[in-house]
Length: 321
Ligand code: 2P0
Image (tube, rainbow, N blue to C red; front, side):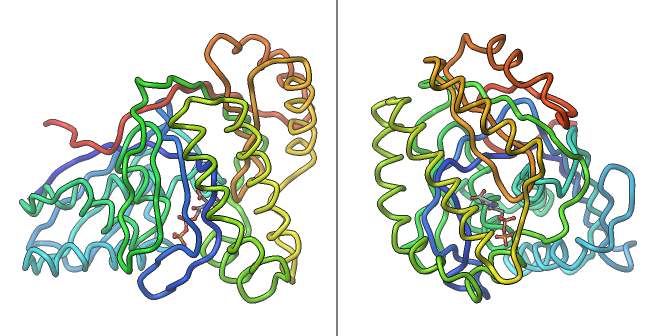
């Protein structure tokens, strides 16, 4: 009754911020993402009658703060399979968790994939995506590789693959400006924005247009168009965060400096654009062949602590052994 799976974080280019159904965890806005290759979470799930409760360890440390969410995910798996035993969940990552690097996306996509296998539940990727979404909506997207969409018209939506990573191989440089955990979780932050940002309704109303345009840009492999939409959508989300009362300020000084340097790169004709999630890290998406120019532009920025280069990667999958 044990299985292990790996999933990678994804970076949304058209972002999810706000829920239309908090109980079922359905986003208010459609989102479109790219799954990374270089970062991963590997998760082992083991159901046993010897367990007296569910337990969770992340990178070797028992983590009670996330246990409730993990138990809720395990409960969903137990309901669909008839399993009654508790589970040990142990996850390792090769990147800092809770720092705006989509650790919950990778973590829950891996957990659901491993958990289904441990219980012998042969679910389609779509059904696993639906289950992952119930825990963390961005996790629905990490079930798939390459370019992925999560539409929101259905009452219980799943993500769908849009374009394979091999079809349009983009690069992503993750500019790490802090490895500290963020102060306000995404879940808490987006619910606050929905209640207390005067820009929230405009954000939700304008999202389908951004999504449709980005989708078209991906299908036509139009980098310039994707760059324009992604930067605008990212800044719009951060405008909603900043206008929330009390304000959600996920950036630090280095975040702003890196944004300016990417704008400068673009002005010089380098095909690269930035995007930023609920944390201070900047992700620079580029066409292949510009790694040296990007490194050179950002590496001496005060406050930059690490640069991780990645290509686009595959979806969640079982690990052997
Ligand atoms: C995204 N983020 O689309 C956006 C951009 C953060 C900023 O999805 O409440 O951890 O667990 O469904 O998926 C982070 O939110 O939130 C997120 P829950 P999640 O990638």
